[in-house]
Image (cartoon, rainbow, N blue to C red; front, side):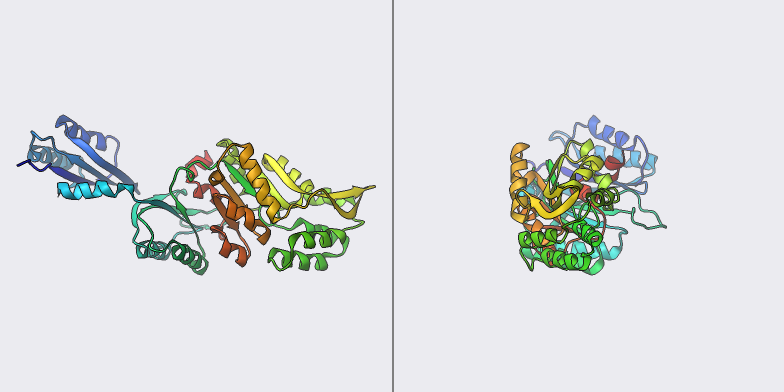
Length: 407
């Protein structure tokens, strides 16, 4: 009869210090064991280290465990040994082909309620949490403000019982307790996004430029009503665009320069673009707004591409007409595809970010579509939503940590 392989799970806990892992694994090395799995976490200088190892066929585990026990005593740490049946190990190996997903929890401040309710949804779907990592920096005890981020990433394994319900539950929970939750398949595309396309008005900037122009032209209320109706999807975007632009007739071109120089940049945008540029991502503005303002942001933020509408100007005045094809929702999706082709990347490697109904075609086309501080209809239709923190939340959804961003 073949002797069953001797497999031991070694758990080590205690105060972390340099060289601790070296001294313990040196004992394993002297006994020529095979490492089958290893994982380590340190929380507030408290170490949790697990090593799954196989004892060589011609050796016995007793001397190894005795040496580990004595060394642990010297180091002032606790050890626990758990024998693992070969059949249980084989079962574990066979499960490694299961689907994997990433759940990202984003908030200003992390509470036990957040963790409890998010993990309850994960458990309800029959998924197992393999790893939990904090992506944000250490959370201050005081002065929680707009720059504070508390972001945790869960790596989960398994096949959801009802993926659509899971996403709806996450969206509902996020709205109820004031956090953002992203749920992504952990595949090669998630780790290789290369192009990010942004809407401009109410996404990259915290205003609708056409409303600002209308106020200066004395038709603010009229234009704002049309804008809101268009963003809610109640009227056709192209029709609403022509109506609004016509009301700007006679406005002086100098007003555009003044507004451009005072655009309110959205929280986190500069941090986001600085990081994306540093790591080689391409960025684009695909806007139903105006290229005059898009080009201003291109220079300020380092955007690679700008596609937006052009206002007709004669003798220093707006004519109430536009030039060229209107950039509406379908045009945005078309431009996204063209940019992906130009950059020689798959659509799954593209991220799209927007807030209005005219952004939905590109949000649904991109591998990662994000409704940013969006209208309810848009949030309900998009794959993902950010509603509680700034644009730099996108970095965490890509797996960046604060140390990657801040450096």
